[in-house]
Image (cartoon, rainbow over all chains, first blue to last red; front, side, top):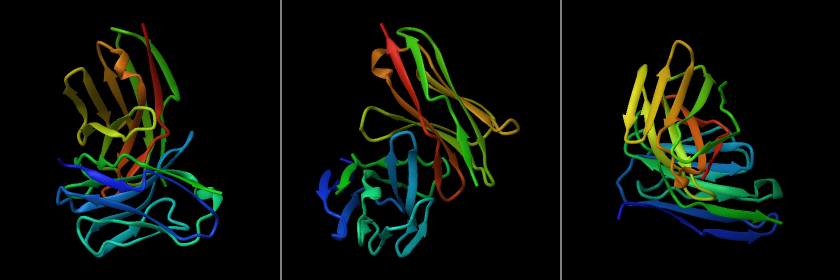
Length: 114
Length: 108
């Protein structure tokens, strides 16, 4: 089954404790991205990757890192999480870039930073 | 920069037709997408307009006017399961910039 898989689905942690949210897709997609969703603010892009070893900042990259060493994986790293990073996070992928390419979203990761 | 405006809430009756508008201001524009999201779930792709005009997919249609920086999503024969949030998103060529979403409530 074609899918985007995020782990963990839920996480409660404390300020300053490094964490990684994994994202993996099995569709051989070139484009991958991370979004955060907060009430009343819609989806805001954190980082995106056009292909392996090609990553770029989105609208809200502060406090986050990503890497794209393999085509299928695009982990989101919070080196020193803070409470303002409490949010619902989505990973998405598409075949080639953005234009006229449906974004396939993972089921989301709900992070709570205390 | 980019900004998108869409109504925050819309209520409609089962079986009716509803239109959700989206206006945008952007420095780079390739197209307009629409996504549906049920409570806390993953957004799912509905449609994409790269050119002016109407795109129809079953009960859903989407329209784009580049000259007016305006688009809309039209939902026909509303069903209870259509109650969800709907997001327009501007395609800038390398990223999607989402609006804040419209919460659609379908009532019996």
